[in-house]
Amino acid sequence: MQNRSTIPDHIARHQEDLKGLADRVWATPELLYGEFRSCDAHTEMLEAKGFRVTRNLAGLPTAVMGEAGEGGPVIAILGEYDALPGLSQEAGVDFHSEVEGGGNGHGCGHNLLGSASLLAACALKDWLAATGTPGRVRYYGCPAEEGGAAKAFMVRDGAFDDVDAAVTWHPGGITRVDDPLALANTRIDFTFTGRSSHAAATPHLGRSALDAVELMSVGVNYLREHMVQDARIHYAYLDAGGRAPNVVQSKATVRYSIRALKLPEMLSLVERVKKVAEGAALMTETSVEPKVFSAVSNHLENLTLDKAMQAVLEEIGGVPFDDADRAYAAKIRATLTENDIAAEFAVINQPPSDELLCDWVAPFRPGGEQMLGSTDVGDVTWKVPTTEVLVATAAIGTPLHSWQMTAQGKSPAAHKGMIHAATAMARLGEKLISDPALLAEAKREHADRLARSPFVSPIPAEVQAPILTREEALG
Image 1 (cartoon, rainbow, N blue to C red):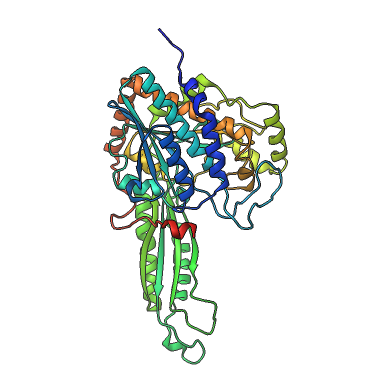
Image 2 (cartoon, rainbow, N blue to C red):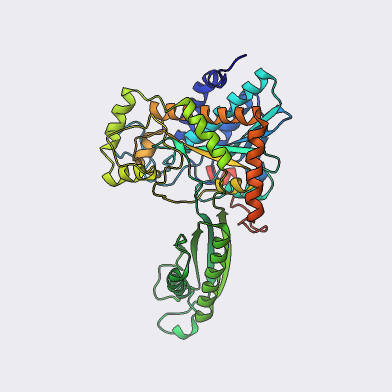
């Protein structure tokens, strides 16, 4: 009887191809819903590796799904490949140097994220075929995690309806099972419409949409005193009505990002912000139209899967970095602040140290400080049992959404981290398919949590994703 897992062998067979994919996606950084070249590259890889491919998944032109295997449980492995604006950066250096002035860049490591997830799917596909085990693996190529909520639209529209469990990962500085905490978030645009007039000659005939936006800001600021403590509200002017101060602005639009730790509390807060907007419109005799741009849910914990992933991490150990990796990490560390480094160690409840790279596995639920953002993975967690692992690909303390993260995105250390992440995800997939009791317990826990708090999609049924055409994205 063979006790050793063959997953590492299958990983090794495909890893060079997937490292190449990661580097190609790094070189073509594309923003939300415009990831046509990145999606094409993932689609071509899926076809080359023998997956059954579904394009335009859930009606999203830059989403793709590849499936392999027959019968049995369905294990989803989630990938992403969208970039961020303003983070263009030369690779492999320790100073800020843009490839394209003001261009995009992979400052969150999604070039690695998607490629490692596809690598894990390749390994699990080969394992299923080699062992004749009933089961299916699916790679979900997901666009627009950075503000576009693609997975939330995919969940709402049924793309995960027959999935039994999901696993994903994210690049970072410390290898650990992610804490099941993320803020539910709605991004909603408020467009105020008034009446223009000459600001000096006939100001009494104008009804200022810009005044309404500013009064809404005042109202929301007073609302902050009466929100749950974990709520967050941010805003940005999309259209301030023009640059001519002698014209009463007839139209203005502001986008609000409304967050809370629990989905019901976030949805309630959205309604309160809407009332503030209505009040601002009433005061200025304008009209207001709210329109949801995107929305995501908070994370629903699955302790069963999280513990299983921790066990996998402890089995395979930390990422095997070498001296050359540490030498480059030392150069990157010199560009970071003490606060950057302390913040990452604080998450795992440890004081800062001189360690440059994380070649170990952090303890499970260490009780450190929580630094919460939002992600559309949250919606998947409400649909199916899900776990997420964070794997070291960069110098400890490297902030996400930074030029330093972009610079390290093609490094040998980053490649080692993505291969390690793929191994962990494929190993967990192997365990879930091989151990029906483990999968059943994860599904039972998920059902129990939903029974206490049923899922309501934060995206209204009539709202469509703000997708782009290939021509719009690529010009």
